[in-house]
Length: 380
Image (cartoon, rainbow, N blue to C red; front, top):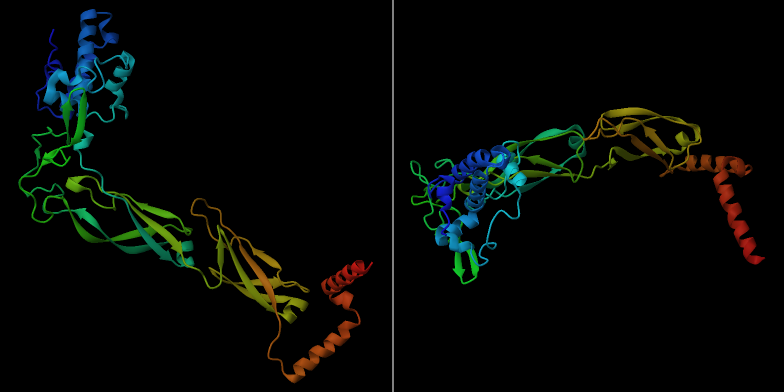
């Protein structure tokens, strides 16, 4: 017994669009689904036929083969073997009926091969100063890219005309050549896989639907970004061919080295030189922050390398409201270019302190005591 034509089963014309086929399938599947027909065997059989027809016509590859070879394309193992419906139960197919309504739905069925591909994503390297990265800034950037052609509105066809469905692949972008038990699929030579043919191309883009142009964009950089962070500008990448959606632009941040501060996540570090006198007697100095100068109290007898923490003077995180600290490491600076009188005064001070070295220079005394013990142990 010859099988019924799949187009007749769904009640659609042979040149029906993917959307029309899917609409017809949903209507019939809901009408004849066993959950609704209460065990009516004839309606259940009709449902199976509807399901089988849609599994072919709803798949671009199977539909192309069916259009060329009819039911013979699926006999003797062609295109997945004989028979449909064994690998999917009624519950699954009922889910397909309602899936698209609630955000699910079939993937692939409906001719993805005939759609132009989305444009490429782009990357723009942005160098920023530490101050701008911490505070945030809107920057103007220039990006050479492809944009949608204005005269043809991205279609690739001259204004007043439109692309036609390819007569060779019927809009699927691919054709099949059958040799015995094997079916070989290849890109349609007529439309080069686009599914449509432009007989009168646009003079500006020559049928591509896009042209090269340098775009000027305003990128808003949020406060707190750091090297390696990326800012995504949706739809600002390359325009796709023949009206396909554009890709995205990713702005890659690189924060330049700072002459004073070193950043570690949300904390800032800097070295602050202090005089020998301030370190010994204590005092108050000014230290820089990204918001201006602040006072820092140095206690007496401060040693070089001492770290002072200024809370909340670091960087506010781009991902939270937490602000880091500023860590100031003091470095005692040895006096240079001393005059004769200044040198004499230091000698006098050293002589007076020399009588009680352990009291005034405990680290020095401890170090040399350790060295002496080390050599004494070697001798013993």
